[in-house]
Length: 102
Image (cartoon, helix red, strand yellow):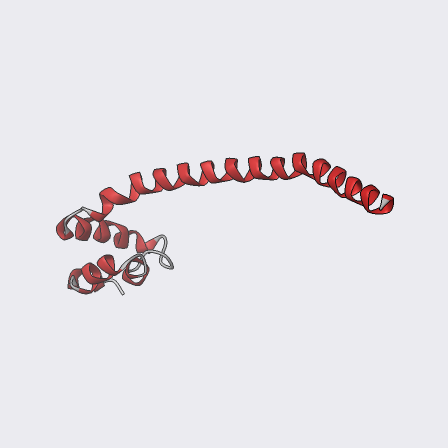
């Protein structure tokens, strides 16, 4: 019928008008995705070398960190280091000298 044709044309027109708005949303999401991927690559570049440090090096870094406890007592503690990852937790727990300033 004529009313169905008119209605169909209105629906098509509405859909066609929505396409540019939807495309703008897609473009924005693609841009955000690219930014997040870049941030992820940067994060990996920083974090991965730390994961390969031998425990002896980590202990020296941790000891220096903990020695700052006089100035920053609330954040410079073995407890803070243990929350980073399971490997750091193991290193901290296995190193008694890190616990002398508690």
